[in-house]
Length: 554
Ligand code: NOJ
Ligand code: NOJ
Image 1 (cartoon, rainbow, N blue to C red):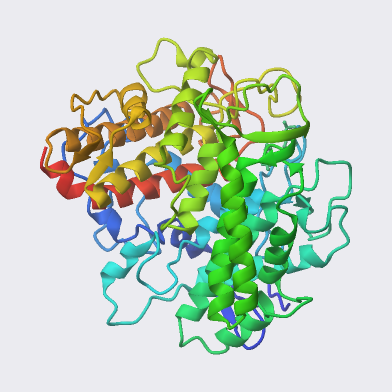
Image 2 (image 1 turned 90 degrees about the vertical axis):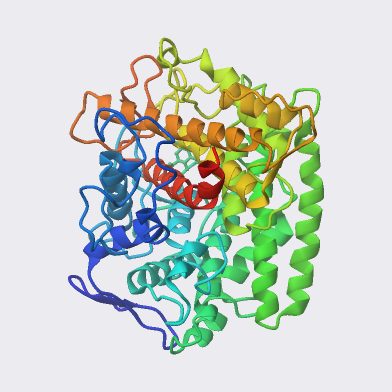
């Protein structure tokens, strides 16, 4: 790959050459790719009381491009009034543009000691590039579909800076796959120069190839959906999905691995437990479903059928994770090893998995963020942590949460666990997706899980005894509003803790908050924390658009 430092560099292969024009525009482009235009239409005015100012009030005005922002704010120059949004965008940009590091690499954190997170973790990086890959495949449909509101007459919009990053991610990932690792494709992390980290570590981590395949499948679909890009089809069928066995292409390699290895025990998202994990399997299912579609569209129908069969079997295996007795989804089954104290297996990774899976498959049936079992898991998780962390006491703000109640990882070593911004932001994100779903359907199922989600988290009691609440029932907008308000107050709390931090001027989120003081704890400027916050903001904007008419009826 040719690399020119400075203004412009070219990445790609097979005739596809995309140019990274101006680095400075990329963070804004990536941050604004979904809601650039949508953000100009704030959610129903008056939903929330305004606060004292942008720093402590996550009011509706501070979410939108209006008020204090130039009218000509474009997709690339998104006006950001929220300091945490700005700081998060900067972290997001910096982690994907480390000087001297090949484009397509994303560091987990700039912290190089206590802890050393200066690596490209396949999971973290994929979640980072998943944010960049929100570009809709065809300019319509997809979860980022409102970009289409600009009109299809001009053809689907192109995003050169984003294209350069995605091509870089494909290239870097291919290098990882081809390097001599200990755990093959399940290798969890790499040095930023692309060489494998071969020291002792929990491996394989099989969520990695699934997430990577999901992101790069989206990239392939984007390219195929933009018929006019010279060489795009050749690039896709050579670099991304070649339909050959053995394959030389990055997506098919991961898909073949996932299809063959999903039954094997692996190490979990938190790099601690060996067994069968809900998080890993839900994403494996999503990857094979998306991969099957790509395979089909490229004429590899034998592989498509094979991926579909495996996806169905994974789907069936997920049912065992639901424990009616405990009332939540069990994070790990068939445990081989892990911290003995982790007995509840109540874990925010269930919510994270549901959010990621839905992102890539908006038609998801089971285990979407609004699935009763996922709602129940969120309720139980919050219940287990409300009293666990002192910062949750003496505040009217909703509880912040960590990974799982028995956690003792303090971000550097093992003492006591803490709340995590990315886990907390996921609760807000879930709330917005749930409300958006209800607004889209114009009804919601009332069952014990949605009822307890509404009453326990959204402080909304529904009087109706019916099994369904339809949009014309006055309690429907009340439920929608309650859930959105819950999400907003969670984000407000995240923002408030970030602003209150004694390390003041560096406003970005770290990995954890000290459970007593709320001070930053663990890796600073954690990319995943930034992405989780920005993703939740995007979901808020989308939900505002979808729920506008519902809320206006209040
Ligand atoms: C132990 C932690 O519990 C785990 O989550 C983390 O990934 C590793 N240490 C590496 O920092
Ligand atoms: C620890 C987390 O447990 C793990 O999921 C993550 O990949 C690494 N830190 C890097 O952020």
